[in-house]
Image (cartoon, protein in one colour):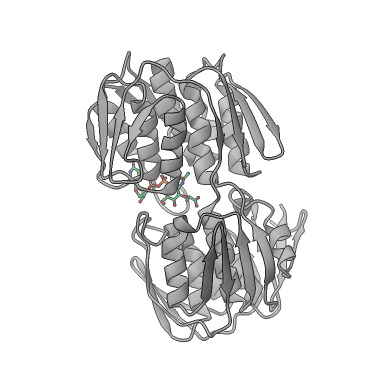
Length: 420
Ligand code: EPZ
């Protein structure tokens, strides 16, 4: 399997363009199931997870073609209601086809996504919500079997503001009879982008981005073209890299409005962050200060930026407490970071990060998407060489990562084959 090799110590400088957001593209591609016709998506990132969802949509009977950053999907002949285990196990977000399949084909059989490294990640809230809309739900042989002649709108309260749960229910409710209100709904920008696409298709959704989303059911929807919004987590990762390496990085084609918490925390840590239109410049010209971080659902500090920020705190000047409130096991990167010389102690959902350390390069292993990003960041500042194995985790969510970092002056390369 490929590895990434980094010789650390370079300050990054230059410009990096941000790709389309994986976590926006996945639900928007799933939404194409809701009606027959030709959909065209632009600014679609070239990522493993996008390949997986397009393979899944094809399995259901859609015609898919991919050209550069565009994906064209014809769902006219989509008629298969089963999402097979071998695809769902590759990507938990495959569960996003459940709501649209149920709404369009009146039944769905989707393999239960297993847990993953960062937590058990159940889908009970997705299923409870669909049952609330009148679906008959069975769990058999590792599959969810759902059926409903026609879903009926109702009020749904999410115990936790689940991102894909909100997306699944919002999609299912577009074709329900009557009105659905999702309360304690997730507020991520990817949910607003999905609602905008669904409304362009003819749905009647209001207040997406707030904790109470209203969906008035309609009789039918139309295919559309849609552009994928920029990836706020990719942008945040490069912002941290600029501060971490005491460099000067211009992040282009991003959406600063989606990064308010990350910008605020970087400034609090002493980085010079300036925003202009769709660009953010991060100048790491002063010593980084230790600050405390607590991950929260949007608009709070994103859990998907926690591992990256931990590396920044590892080289900051004091003691930082990082609290992970979203997932129960999202400190897996800590053991690998400790092998690079960080001083981090975990107590429950808190990580105490003692800064002022000089990281040293080492062979390390990626375990999940954002943990892999933190290992790359650590390699950029570590003294000596870092070899990262199992980088297929990275390829799920970062488009052309080593090319983009090389363009900023990093000494980074992908080594085909390599170790275990
Ligand atoms: C989405 O995952 C993202 N993935 C994740 O990004 C992100 O970390 C997460 O939201 C939180 O922001 C996609 O959008 C494809 P949740 P999701 O449902 O929807 C619990 C990445 O790096 N929960 O908001 O699966 C759950 O266990 C990925 O790109 C239930 O208990 O997350 C977790 O503790 C990683 N029951 C919390 O809620 C449910 O039915 C938040 O999960 C659903 C969720």
